[in-house]
Image (tube, rainbow, N blue to C red; front, side, top):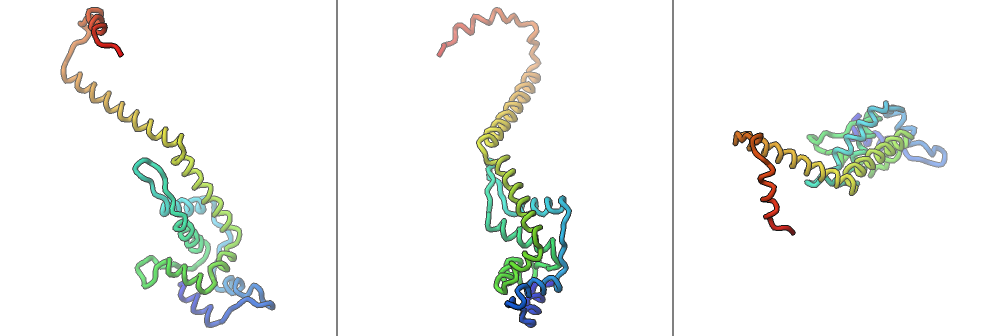
Length: 193
């Protein structure tokens, strides 16, 4: 269902919560929308991974930077899209997803929609937070930074050793004939620190 159509219908029917019908808006949404009461865990995990991929960036040192506001907006839109038949614009239309998010907020429909989704929103939000904690722990701690730097040093040393080995091979030196004991005295001539 198109978000603009939902808002238009909602306004035309003048749905409001009252003392007599305190859940009128949620009841309307339950009738109007197709709402899934459960998504398989793998789908939840994929949804959260997509949110984090859209909102996190890595700098050149491997440090992860988080845009928390985008994370909230993208997560909320993703949850509504995954759990209901509401369709957000793809960006090619007159309105984009953020405009439609704002329209839901302006018409006081966002929180009731999330309420209709129920506990699944909190479950997915917990999963999102756990996955974010893992990303931070795996990338932004001193241990992770040192491990990343050490890995780069090891890769550089491996590259240097390979290059030196190739150069020695190019020289075609036969080192088996060299008497090492003759050259030990040269080391004693070098200045010592």
